[in-house]
Structure formats: structure tokens, C-alpha cells
Amino acid sequence: MSTTLLVVQVLNGLQLGILLFLIAAGLTLVFGVMDFVNLAHGVQYMLGAYLAVLFWRLTGSFAAAIPLTLLAAFAIGLFLELAIFRRLYARDHLDQVLATFGLILILNDGVKALFGSAPLSLPIPDALSGSVRIMDGLVYPFYRLVLIAAGLAVAAGLALLVSRTRAGMLVRAGASDAPMVSALGVDIGRLFSLVFALGAMLAAFAGAMAAPLLSVESGMGDNLLVLAFVVIVIGGIGSIRGAFIASLIVGLVDTLGRSFATDLLKLALSPSAANQAGPAIASMAIYILMAAILFVRPAGLFPLSRTA
Amino acid sequence: MTGPSRQSPSRAVAIAVPLLIFAALALLPLAAGFGPKSYILSLGARVMIFAIAAISLDLILGYGGMVSFGHAAFLGIGGYAAGMLIDGGRGDMLIALPVAMLASAIFAAATGYVSIRTKGVAFIMITLAFAQMIYFFANTLSAYGGSDGMTLYARSTLAGMPLLKGETAFYYVVLALLLAAFLACRSLVASPFGRALSAIRQNPARMAAMGYDVDRIRLVAYTLSGTLCGVAGFLLANQAEFVSPSYMAWQRSGELIAMVVLGGMGTLHGALLGAVAFLALEEILADLTPYWRLVFGPLLILVVLAGRGGLVGLLDRRRG
Image 1: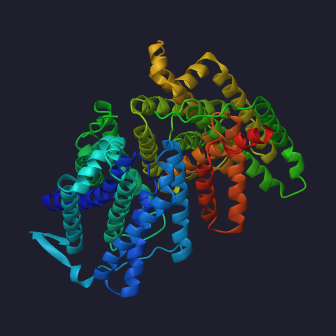
Image 2 (image 1 turned 120 degrees about the horizontal axis):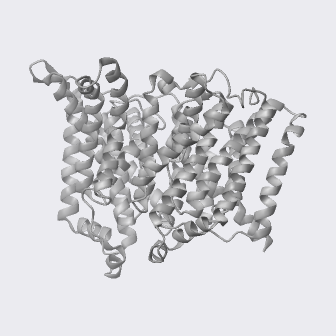
């Protein structure tokens, strides 16, 4: 287990963590403020990737495709909130699960019908391609570093937005006690729409930034959605800070587990047994972690104080 | 837990619907002789297997108010138990079925013990995460095909006899098990235990105050439900002669919930009807277009927006 490999895997883990945070941030806000289970959040990540490919094809420029994607994702988020989700806030969680599950089916098959079922790809823009030498014997793709930096910047911006602005204050107030905020004369419906659209935009940003690294295909958001759920359950539902820390934990544990579990087990087990058990344990690591955390703290690491 | 409410099932519908469905299912092999027989029989068996899974889910979803989003895990556990035992030459149903049930029960009891401590949304997500955990675990089982899954070289025998081999015989074995499962669940929900479970859905605090061990009743219900779903998994692997991690994909769990709600939850016969309707709809739509989910998705949203009750609710309203 060399230092170089460790550094590379830590960077990869950070990268997964950042992507997870961008998805989980919107999810946890929507949960916290509106008490709304949105399974369709994962397909908004997928939509971001598809939109980035679409706008890149139209404009030929990655730099233009990203802001266009964000705008379009924001608009789609607003539309979905007005057309469907708004009618579900007062319903119980089961109705929300089912309706948003229906939406997943529609969007997953919709992109197949529009773009074909073959995976699409988006080239890394020239300005961001190439590799950077981080230390002796370690070169790391520049684009991946950009992704980590962009994600951290968004996280910082979001933290400022939530903790320092009036809109952020209303969001936090709404998460603790929505009826009270509404009674104080705030148009809570409009606040919900904006939070929802912002969440959709963040997920789409994650999708668009990940598009050059992954194949863009139907269903690409489905498994990330479940990871994002794990993140917000560990972090505490509604907490941005919890989502950020839990994202990094999940990203690092998953990535490092997959690369080092087998080696670590070889210290205790025979090599063949370690080769068998390593991948199995690594694939379950984050879920076991989640179960352990919940066992000790059922409300997650950073539970919101609620007055409800 | 946000207890999903259920309408009180009209008595006539509660008797007529299952009676009609079971009569139709019993006669289907005779009618199948006039059409593509093996296709009809295998579709029929598949419908009944999913009906067992849907009934088991209704037990905790409709009666217990526990929105489990990881129920497909038990399909996979039952399926893998069948596959591994057949692979090891111990595939007789008298051994493999109890093992499949035991494995499902252990997984249900262990994950249920943690999950039941959480409430509401967290419960949905934890059951989902546990199912995802076992899904990824199955992907690493390289001795049993890993992510490609494993093909079963034979179906289970029944007391040494190759009873499950023929489509018609297999069909009737599944029908018998479905009937047994349905009747067992019916008497369970009517029992003091079932009444307590329903009451806990409606008012857990009150039941706790009355001295009921709320968490234990929930855990027992969750474990029974998982065990029954393991039976469905065992049958599904035998029917397809194949088992893979995709049995446990979380979309499958979503489909099971859709079946129960589509049919009308908290009635058992609603789950039965829902499984029939869901798979029939899938079969018809998939025949028309490869993008059948584009039709099914909006349908699901409309059913939810239109209100609770499902197909059984429609029948009830029509009568009264």
C-alpha cells in the first residue's frame, strides 16, 4: 500500500464525496424544509448530464454548456414542482415515494426515447484536459481536480447562502417550523419552489460535471440516489453541514474500502480468503457504517432541532 | 411512522375478489390449451409468484404502516438460497424452501431490528439501503456468477420427484402456495396479533401506553413478511431457472410497492389484484412499445394523485 496509491484513492474518494454532496444537498433541503421524499432527485442528476451533452452539441463549447444546463435544470425543477410535487406535500410519504418513482420511470425511459439507449459521452474540454504532477511519481488528471475544486466552491457558496442571507434564514426557519414561518407572512409556497429548483440545479451541476468522466446513460442516477439517501440519513435529515461531512465520509469509505479492504484483510486472513471477503466487505462497508451510526444516533450525526 | 390509512374493505368485495381470482387462476391451465400454452402458464406462474411477494409486503405496508422500500431483497435471498442449494445438489424443495425462508427470516430480523428504531422517512431509506447492501454483496459472489447471475441447471425436486419440471405441475404448486399464503395472512391479520399490528399503525403511542411492546410486534411482522417474500424468491428462481443480483434492484422494490398500492393496500386481496394488474399491464404495454414505462409512469402518478384505495377502492365505491 504505497503513499502514491493512497493519495490517489483519497482524491478519488473526495471526488465521489463532492458529487454526492451536490446531489445530497438538494435532497436534504427538500426533505428538511418540505418533509418530502423525492426519489426523482437521482434522475435530475442524470438530466444534468444529458443536458450538458445536448448543449455541448448545440454550442460546441463546454464553458457555454454548463450555465445553459444549470438554467434549464432550474427551469425543469420549477416546472416539476408546480406541475406535480406541489400536490404531494400534504400527502404521506408513501404517496410521495410512488409518484416520484413514477417520475423516475418516465424520465429514464424518456431520455432513451429521445437520445437512444446507447450511452453518450462528453469529451473533457481542452483547457481542462491533461494531468498535473502532484508529487513524485503521482500525476492526477487536471479535470478531476477541477471537479473537486468546483464542488468545494459550490459547497462554500451554499453554506454562505444558507447561513448568511435572508433567503437562507427563511429556509432554515422553514426546516424547523414551516407553519410558523408561513404564519409570519412569508410566502412559503414560493420558498418551496425556489428550494426545490435550487436542489434540482445542484444535482444537474453534479451530473454535468461528471458527464466527461462517465458514460451518460439512462439510469445513471439511480444508484447514486441511494448513496445520497445514505448520506442524508447519516448526516441528519435537513442538515447541510451534516450532508457535507457525511458525503465525504461515504465517498472516502467507499473508495478506500474498495481499494484497500483486500490488502487489510490479508494481514489477518489467508490470501485466498481475503480475496473472497475483501470485495464483499468493501461493497457493504458504507451500509454497515450507516447501520452502526443509526444504532447509536437514530437521528443522524447532525440532527436538526425541531419544534414540531 | 406516518400510518398510511386504509379504507375499510367492503365484505362482499373482500370475498368475491379473491374467490374470482383464485377460480380464474385454477382454470387458466385448461384455457391455456387454446393458446400459446407454455407462455401463458409461465406468465401465470410469474404473476402468482409476485402476488405472494405483494401480499407479504401488504402485511407490513398496509396493516403495519411500515413503508419498506427494500422488499426485493427477500426475493433475492430466497432466489439465491434456491440457486446455491440446487448448485450444491441439495435443491429438494423440502430442504431448499425452509432454508430460503430461514435465510430471509434472519436477514429480516437483523435489518428490521435496526430499521424499526427509526421513524418515517428514515425507515424508508434504511430499508432501501439494506436492500442495496445485499444487492452489492450478491454482485461480489464470484462463485455464483457475480453480477452476471447464475443459471440453475435444474429446478428443485419435491421429495425426490421432479414435480416442478413440467409447466402445468409447477403452476399448480405455485397456486397452492399462493392460496396457502393468502389464507395464512388472512387469519394472521384477523388474529389478536394482526389487530394489535393495525392498531399500532393507527396510534403507536396509545398501544404503547396500553402495555403492548410496539417495537417487538413490528419486528415480528417485518420478519414474517420477509420470510414469506423469501418463498416468492425461491419460486421465482425456480421459474426462471436463473437468479441474479437484479432480483434485488431497488426498482424492483418500488414495483412491489406499486403493485400493493395499485391494487389497494391493507386488504390482501388488493395486493393480489395489484400484482395481476401490474404484470398484465407491463406485458401488454411492453408488447406495444419498448418505452412502456413512458406510459406506466404517468399512470402511476395519476393513480397517486387521484387518491388512495386502488382497484379495490374502485370496486368498493362502485358498489356503494
